[in-house]
Length: 394
Image (cartoon, rainbow, N blue to C red):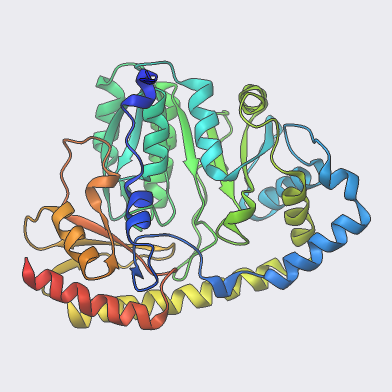
């Protein structure tokens, strides 16, 4: 049988990162391409104990259907924590639990985007979100990301000239893939521009807890007295990505529509996973655990930067990230990035070409993304030495 797929899926390309991971999944490959947490930071024993306790004490709740909005104790706990620590959430806001922050992006797109509507996004940006917007046949308008965040002048121009702009998508903290952090001034300017032009902001913050240097900056959502920001959070980077527990904070009217959209996808997120996260927040020293993660990743970041500086500083330039999981490296010559990454893969080092993260196929970049959380210390040292050989070939 010849299959005739929908127009929206026929034009969609698979994630370059996932395809690279398939090809380079062998045991000898140095994994600079992924963004997985380091295995040593998983609190596996703690999760095992919590899960066992839940199944002994609340088996029916854990194994039965739940409400689409999510497990109420977890929603209340998240709400209290966000308000107390980050001034996130107003009386008009409500929380929905999702399958990771990625589902928040999908639900926001489902709720707001008609075919042909425009999403303004950072360029480069997270490929998973870009592909999500493309799956709804949205037009993407990429705004270059500077070391302190999105170019605000170009953002303002795009808001004035692009047709049917429905949403601005941003990752303000330790952006994926660039690692850049948006300044406080730009966060405020972005909010004011969105308010002026009546456009929703989708603030994606999966890496916010992973700061290694400097002081935390307020989220864009913390300014939101007008109800124009959808905030996407996740426990993937601080507890476990396999649990697939994320959440959205947005005005109740938006949350209600997202709830209907989620019912059409998966009814609700797994109850036992939500209950594990709730008990972890209630019973464990989460600050201590996050501090441990920060110490591990800070050391790995310093090691990778030291190796880059000593081995390939003559070939690349980069801005040292203040947190997150990624380093954005720019080659000093105009090189075909796909060829470069294939050459690295042939030497058993997996890196991601920067072109995979661009809003438009016509956008060009001479950059590639490195991840430092997944590889071991030994792999970081060896992998950068191999990249030096690849750089010399080009």
